[in-house]
Image 1 (cartoon, rainbow, N blue to C red):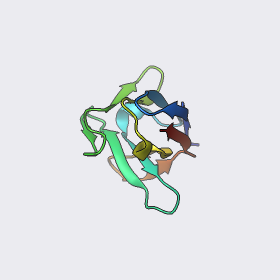
Image 2 (cartoon, one colour; image 1 turned 120 degrees about the vertical axis):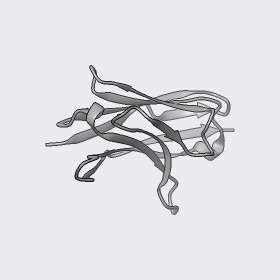
Image 3 (tube, rainbow, N blue to C red; image 1 turned 90 degrees about the horizontal axis):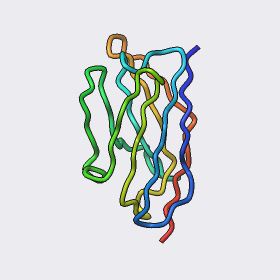
Length: 117
């Protein structure tokens, strides 16, 4: 059974930092494309960052230079370091894993990030 669990969300002041973690069980994160998405209530879920099975990283324009994605194969986690946070980053952040061969997809339950001004 595959399970993705996000953690690390919370309340932070504008300009602050948070580090989110996506812990996986049932799949090796090193062999999957791992993505972070975020969603504001009433809006569509939007792409934030990803790391492929070949460790290639990509970022949404809105977070480039402020967020960094990293993978720990031993812990089987993918983290999202978020710096210089602003109110526009307030959202529920979701971890997503995609099998590069079958494109089967898994989602976590999400973690709330709230940035106060």
